[in-house]
Image 1 (cartoon, rainbow, N blue to C red):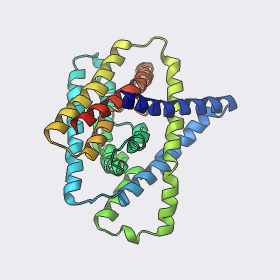
Image 2: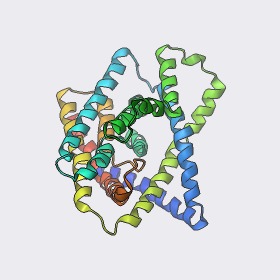
Image 3: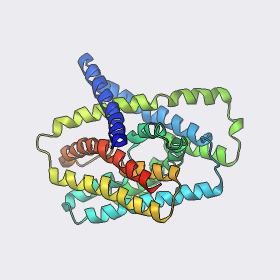
Length: 308
């Protein structure tokens, strides 16, 4: 119980810090423009830098063909868990809400990256960030494929075009350099600059998390607790539960299991666009799923520890 409370407190500090920073920016009248700048820097520079560095030089890991096959198969496990929840969702929400909630159900939330550092401190493998980064190579292809599947993108060529963003190219470049063992030929000066940029990831996440959390609080007056509750139950309880079963059945190594639990337990992402008439519900789901994750994620890691 003490470990769960300590973990919950650590997660809460990230959120509280972000809220305080956002409120300080709000007083200066720079909150909105800062959010736009930080969001651009995050997705265009900091996050690509982090994934590139972690993929290029994974932390004390042997990246053999079996490792890459394992990452791919475990991604399928997470997707299988997610689509099971999507299948149940189809029978529990109104038809006009289904596509929006289904997309939100499947896609990961990069705001969970700081959790990887929190659980490194609690004895998890230091290679968790590297493993997460290898999983991340599949994030964008899955993201845009899911948008196409649920009719948010109409043209298959648009899926391909959007996938090849700077973020994906940076991941792919690091992967290719690693696979062909030519990472040592990458210019050291440029690599040093990229490593410097990755330091921005967690501070920007803290600000953006606080920003979207504060913004979501403005839309809680008429909360649709039924749909919010269904989402949290399916996304943050059922998907981790199904993942636990598969982890146990296939005896998955702990460092991989830890990343699976983080990916399968994460709250709703604030970056998924909803139809205009459902925008309030999106913010309500983000708020309550974020709050519930402060308890559910530590609880998930507690039960993971019981398995191992």
